[in-house]
Each structure stands twice: as structure tokens, then as C-alpha cells.
Image (cartoon, rainbow, N blue to C red; front, side, top):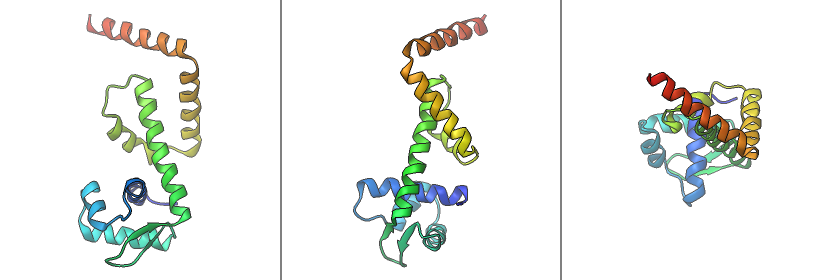
Length: 142
């Protein structure tokens, strides 16, 4: 199992791989706002765990294992952001999902996924919830 930090690196490598032919250390450094040596250290660990292929000053390539886990990480993040929107959370969805994603168990992620699917398949339930949130907000202002 990867640490939250290594998950962040792998998630970003996966995101970059969707739109770039070549992922570079500097791309990751800029996106995650970390120093180049920190990226390199993380890349060696990801390589040791067989999530990527990487040699110093070379390209970063995801292995099949890396693609699979990277897809899961991106999907998990998107699910949590969608969940936050559905429950009308007044937060920065991306930042909140980032804070949540590493600390929720797989069982909790699955439960959230089930709830999101339920809400999406029952629009009247979502409308009732939105109405409830609006009424509650107005009551709290009084």
C-alpha cells in the first residue's frame, strides 16, 4: 500500500499520462509544488513498487499496475468531489476531496459510491434534499 504522498505522485503521473506523450519530473514538481529532488525520490519508490518505469533524466512511464491504480486514484478523487457537490458542501471540492481521499477506507469509499449512484438515480430525492438544505440555511440566518 502506498503512502498518501506516493498516491499523490502516482495520481498526477496518471493525469499527465492522459494528455501528454511524455511525463517529466519538472511537470510533476510544478503540479505538486515540490522540489525536484523530492519528485525523484518518490519516482524511485514508485519504480521499486513497479508502478512506473523510470531512469534518471528519462521518461516516466506507467506500468499496467500503475495505470490501474492511477485510474482508481483519479476515479476516487472524482467520486469524492461529486459526493461533496451532491451534499451541498460549501467547500473547495478539490481540496476537500484531497484531504479525505487518503484517510477513508475502501469500504467507506464503496459506501459513498453507492450513495452517489442512488442520489443520481433518484432525482426527486436530490430535489427534496436541496430544498431541505435551502430551508435549513434560511432558518440558520434568522
